[in-house]
Length: 537
Ligand code: N01
Image (cartoon, rainbow, N blue to C red; front, side, top):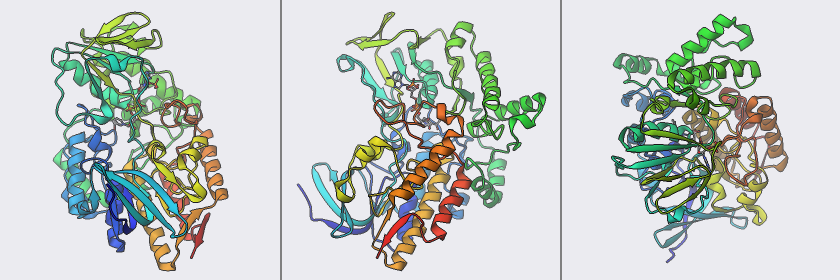
């Protein structure tokens, strides 16, 4: 069944941190807007990822909107690292406070978006149940998230397994009981590392299937002392300004020096200090050059490995759990009792570097070494990140060009915000932005504010279309690649480079220059009349 085509100024896709803020801004600009969300409520990634143990690896006082003094003063975080239920409550509350929930159509999935040159509008197709809706909009903003499409590996025979299969990224809304169950978890990234200790406490037996060990630090999570929250509220303006002027979008209280500028004793003391605080942002800022200089990186990695070793009773097991990549070039994780979980008698590590996962059967799985009977299988296998959410949609730009086809060659995106050949379209935290290696809430705010300024300019000047030039886009891609190749990220194999998904091109999708320098660059583009964009009246 299809309905009459609706008209609006702007379509916003996604009801996470981006969509809520963008709707607030569009409302303030006086634009008509329709916001679409495939989930049943606001929250974005925090709506879908509900596995037990999930909390953010950025501190709550950082991982929250900074644009509104009212929101900052009225909301009180209860823990150092916010849990998923608390973040979801926060976003539901923020959307209500900003009065934007009314714009969202939930359970509504965008299926296609096509640019129509004759009317200079996007035609967006959605489905709500079996009703097809078509919306024509002057602008489209994708707030679909960097980590919203689960990566499901192909595993022979999984369809024959008669037990329960769960995915951390699409966890059921009702609690899962692991009591007396034999459970297996595949994947030891941030999600696996958080869910494993919780499942181990309940399950009869837990098998962890690990291919690549991650670096993880103890979160040292705790209740936020009322005095600390009160201090933050009193000083929020300065605190946020400091965060915005930083490389990662967080206050890190780093000593601000390169590794070589410190004596070995000083370097060790700094590593101890940031480690004991418990925060990936702080630990990865121990030295300015951790992600650039091999010696600095080795010092931090060796220190982290030493700490991991201390937490595992069995030295052979410790060896298998020891990460061997450049620290911070894959996500530096935080945990509560992750390594200690391997000291439990009901936990077995299956090292996929020593034995291959061959197939599933009706009762469990077989590796090249043994069969394992299980009741529940948990996939913690990550995401088709950054480009995944848009690649799966049928997005057609000028001259019939498909976005997925363009990004199959390389994930090109001018400023990490706009794509040549796809006019009047904004991608928030697209490839080539600092999003993945920053406090992403601040990154998203940066983008939404930049987009709002551009929309104001376009409307005021009566410009009907904007489109980045191919040359500007290529120059930006080269710039991002150059920055990335100047760091150890050139060796990274993870969602940061797209290599976690088979067939995806390896890309320099993270702007490695830091959040504050990035903001300077995009503001420069704006102040010079939107350099690199073709603007048509
Ligand atoms: O995903 P991941 P994630 N066979 O890609 C393994 C954010 N996040 O969901 O590396 C065997 O990191 C894979 O092994 P390998 C955060 O930004 C944040 O854990 O491919 N193994 C790896 O071990 C994070 O970086 C929080 O060898 C397979 C794991 O699955 C991002 O989300 C919490 C496999 C995937 O790790 C993604 O984290 C959760 C296969 N076929 C998530 N396929 C916090 O804020 C995949 N793996 C704390």
